[in-house]
Image (cartoon, rainbow, N blue to C red):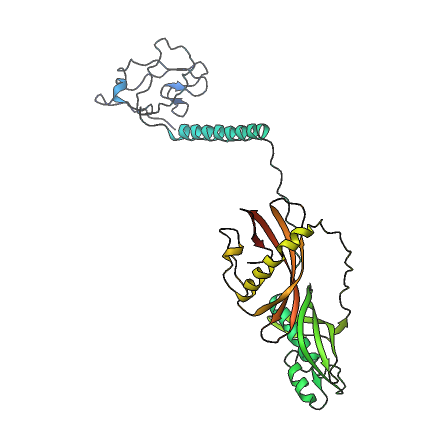
Length: 364
């Protein structure tokens, strides 16, 4: 088998001379030589000088630039490290650099906030926590109290001659199917003249309401009874879920007598006629300007009562030109004709040799 050697045409490009690198490879082995440099030992083959690269102003990239000229001496040298040339503008940043700068700015801002917060914590004392508001006890609503009061009236009202009236009245307070007699044996007669709620407390399923009820029996005797009623809430509805029960009346405190102030008996006697005229005008609703300190306004009772007389007068000894007087008067009711004794406390002031009424305790 013979190999034919084809010589290049005279018009074709002259072939590059074959050279051998120090490691023994021929320059014609294209796989090992790239741009005249051996891939194994980095030996640069000599070549004819080439034209200088275009000026930098033409801004050609490294990849488009011509290859570096080969060494004339044919010595081996380390190829220069490739450096990428990035085209930048004076008014724009590259994206990676801008991201890194933004990250650094954000980090410093966070550190600044943390340091500022810590400094304020050290300088300013910590605020004390607001005290927790005390838990409030639920209070039964007015509707529950009114419901219990009406029930107490109907429960303690009965007449053995007409038992159906009580049963019909109680059915409005009870759940469906409950016995409307509620334990009454159908005997006796009783009516209610007054019912007043005394106390109310909230329970899990409703409210407990105590009602003071004044009853009158068939024989005419009257008595006060205290009835405890258990009101049950079912959704928005109210019912009496169980039988009520009687409870004792609240205890009455024993009042201890307290010594009163020293009295000026002579001044009390001197002012008695003045008090008589003042309370007559006060009961009739007449003009009281003559008896009052200038600028003070006071309304009378408008004639519902008339003065029957002054029962007692007590004027405190201390106070100089300002004294406190306690006067008991007896009023006669204009409608019933009956009379009642009542007590008034007046604040007096002396001016120009006279005593005037400055205020009447409890007057509006």
